[in-house]
Structures are given as structure tokens and as C-alpha cells.
Length: 492
Figure 1 (tube, rainbow, N blue to C red):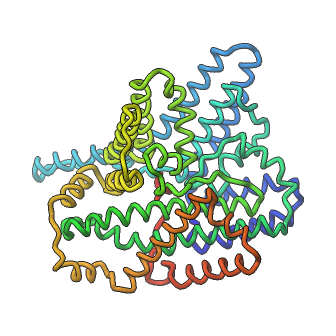
Figure 2 (tube, rainbow, N blue to C red):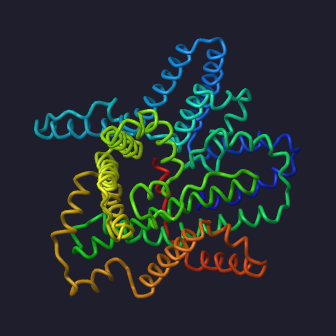
């Protein structure tokens, strides 16, 4: 949605109304805009979002009320009920269509073997196979579960204002792909919206920079890489080992620039309205270990899994063996959260194995040189399973990558078939180098690029704006004849 023509018009309209309407109306405007945004994407998603909002608001009030009456066991029981209900709902949307597809394929194979009298797949399974998951459901369900758990643990009071809680769950910049916000951070900002000034140069300049940098990562780098990645993963039998390795490397950069680009745009949109969202990425490919990688990658999800799954399971308080078990459980859940296919399970378990081995080597006092390069290679290998359409496709890709061999004589012809001329290859490599250099700088300075740009004088800031705008307009993937790629994490 962020890369559609609709979004900048929608965002501009909401921004203007935000400051034209009375200040006390601002939370309700943002809620209404968020519901309209959701409806624009999918009316079914709006219905589910409203249902979750009502249930979460009522559930929080109910759990807090039981605590106040001294009925802790009942509060715990209702917390378990709501969490189980949300998990079941999420599993229905994630796994029932995949299972129905399996049943339909099995029925189709059976009818084929039966000959001309073959029967069609049962209608109910065909309908379930076509069931589409509401956009953003994984993100706002995790927010709802975290909120109810915090109310039960008395870390936060139940929100009495239904409209505020609904806005917390539905706020449109983060609705589709997060970040997964905590109510302690978000709700107080809604109550301070009346203090937001229409023309605060520092806030607007920062917001504009976040949005521009996000669009650069998405449209100039990620979408350009996607053209090549889709072809290589779509038919790996056409390519030798070198090209398959390049495809894995390109996807490693693509998914980062795609998701981080979305997150930067979301942060920038939040800044426009005086709302600070969680920074989801902290130069993850600069990490020197898997543990550090997950403290830098999709920060809101990894911290959510830590606080609401890893620590309740016992964390690292019961010895190394239990810690390793808990780590594997967390990464298994992480893989299953991303998708119904076994390839996502393997992706999650690979990261679990990496983390366990890293912990065991740390306990043994071993230090592996080249930690950053090894971590990048481990992550890039695991991304193959994430990107592939199925586990079989991922295994086939990996097998070919290590067994096909290298055929330099075919590289020119292969590049032409991928429409990779000198100019296109140069743009891809320059884009990757720019992102890599920026991450190196930001990792060392412990600052995000938009914030670093704000520290410059006016001339420096305006030059950065001009450079980003012109780069996006000239080298971005958009316009007639091009298909702008959907943000990858919209499917989760």
C-alpha cells in the first residue's frame, strides 16, 4: 500500500485534517483513518480487526476487574481463554488453507487414478483453500495478546477508552507489517496528541527523511533485486552454482531492504502525527553472532517473543539445557508465525540451531574468527528456505547450489536472459553498497541515518533530501510497464 498512488494522497489528507480539526478529535481521526485504510485493503480484514478490538478491550477490563476482586485464578483462566482463542483464529487463517490445498490435491490425484469417473474435490475444501488471511492479523493479534498479558501481570492498567485501544491496535502506518507496539509506549502518546504542533520543523524534517530513506530502500534497492531474485528462485534448474549463490545473496539484501524500508516509512508516518514507533532494524547484517542478529532484526517481534514466550518458559534461569530447549521452541514458533509451509519451520529451526550452537561454543570458551561473515552466511543460507515456495523447492535449490558447478562461459548468456546489462548490474551493486555503507556508519555511531541527517546544517539536510528524491525518481522501480512488488511481510 505504501508504494501505491493512493497512499500519499491518503496520508496528505489525514495530515491536513489532523491539524484542521479540533485537537481533541485527533485520536478519533487517526482511528477513523486507520479503519478506512484497512477497509481499502480488505473489508474482511476490517471485520476481524473490529472483532479483535472489541474482544481485547472487553477482555482487558474483565481481567483487571477479576484481579481487583481478588479472583486471580479466574483472571488467569480468562487470560488463557483469550490467548487460546486468538491463537486458534490465527492458526485457522494460516494453516487451514494449506491443509485444504493438500486435501484438494490428494482428492485430485485420487480422481485421476480412478479414471474418467474421477470425483471433484469436496466443495468445502475448495472454499477453505481460497480463504485469504486478513492483512496484518499476525501483528495486531500479537499486540492484543501482549496487552492482555500485561494487564494480567499488572504491568499496565486496562484501557477504559475503547477508541484509544482500537487506535493502538489499528494505527494505519503499522497495521500491515508492524512494528508490534507495546501499549505502555503507544497509548500515552495518544493522550498527548493535543500537544503536537502543526509546523515543528525538526519533527517534520525527521519524518520526511525516514519516509524518503524507506522508499529508497524499497523502490531503488529491494524492488530492483526482486526482478532477478524472482527469476532465479522461479526456475533454479536454469542456473549454475554461482548464479544460485548470487540469488541467495540478492534475496538476503532484498528482504532486508523491503522490510526495513516499510518500517522506516511507518516510523516517518508516525512522526508526522507526533507518534514515535519502535525502530524495527538496527543494521542487522553488521551483527557478529546470531543472538546479536536477532537483537537487530525485526526488533519488535524478537523482543515480543522474548518477553511473552521465552521468559515465561523459564528463559535462561534453569541451566543451559533448558535454555537451549526454550530457544528452539521460540524459533519454532517464530517460523510457524511466518507461514504454514514446512520451509518456514525449517527456517525457524535453523536459526534455533545456530543460536544453540553459539551458546554452547560460548560456554566452552570457543571464539570463532570472522564472526560477522559467518553470521551473514548462516542467515543468507536460512533465507533460502524462507524464500522458496516449499520445502522441496528449498532443498532442490540448495542441492543445485552445491552440486551444479560453475560455468563461466554461460554467464553472459545467463545475464542477458535475466535482463542484466552492465547498467542494471551497476545499479544493483551501487544500491547494495550504499545500504551497506550506511549500515556500517549507523552501527558504529549507534544512530539511524535519518536522525544523523538531522544533525547536519540546513544545506546538508536539503542536499540529502534532494539526492534521495532524485535517486528515487530516476532509479526507482515504478511507472508503466513495471510492477511494484508488494511488501514481503504483508503476507504474514
